[in-house]
Length: 448
Figure 1 (cartoon, rainbow, N blue to C red):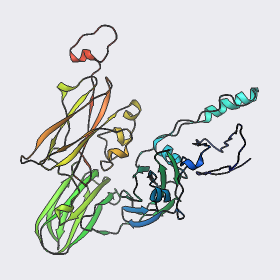
Figure 2 (cartoon, rainbow, N blue to C red; figure 1 turned 45 degrees about the horizontal axis):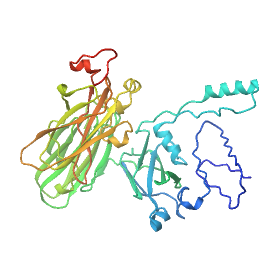
Figure 3 (cartoon, rainbow, N blue to C red; figure 1 turned 45 degrees about the vertical axis):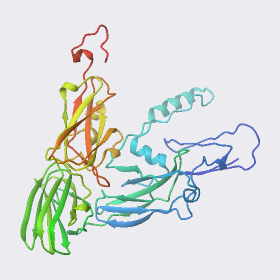
């Protein structure tokens, strides 16, 4: 009745159909999966959203380390208020023609099952089925560094701030009807990011991301102060690796700082109009990555206020077989703190993946927030009120854990409208059973 050859989302409809059983046969040149929606009410909105006439993705900014893409909204979202969310895929390998393809590439997918009763029972068919089962493999999960997949609700623009200069990136956008979980793909695009100049100009209040390699361990930034000011704020957020920062003006050194694991804020007071140079260098010619912000207005600083000690402390006396209690220091600034937890599996504990290896640098990128790591689960968020004392401690109990398992604990701080910054993560293990808590049981140990 109808034949279609496609590698993307498509729709086929028949206006007048006789009652009966209809068969859909899918043939693929390789291992793959597909999502199928069949309905007798196509006008009910259950199908994929309709794209605008211009379904292209426009690159509106291509600066060193930054790519901004925008696209036109789904017409039914604008006219009828249809619940549409947009998901974005960014990688250096290829475009993906559908949302499920990008999702499977990022998070992995199970091996496709073979039909249980295919064929007529001939011996050669059984041999062929055995060969097919042996050749089918599950799709492995990729690291966030290989592909970034994120959903941004109703926004029609997205800024990618972790781009490597001179690298080619592929952008895809998918419109998802959140009511029916059906999706459609915009026309994907690709571009080569701008090559970083020897000296990078900084704009007031804009955060830039930079990378340092063993072959290129230095970066120079310049910032032109338009007028005299009481202070100049320089914030450096380390992603991985150790770097040293030197601030100069007219050849005179104003500040030298070594940045290791924590967010560092440099305040240069009573500054005069002119050109300031910021030199960032790796230690021992190792690779490193960081984010940098310069501003003369403290209100434009998006980063939270962190204590000197950003370590997490697991309270041993409150460890049980189903819960862990973590404590950390807070600051007088009013801001939000969120706790995340992820179980360390056997596979992840022996892998080099940064998502479960808290102390292996530089593979662990602190600038990737918990939402980029599917294994990290948000436990709770709390707000602290502004107060006069210098610092105090707060704690949170993580419940519903499994006995005798190791977990990674993370805490993120964020002020209103700002960026999230992570404390130093830590690991802890729950107790095996109630016997570890000084109680006695009979038979198989259980968690009380």
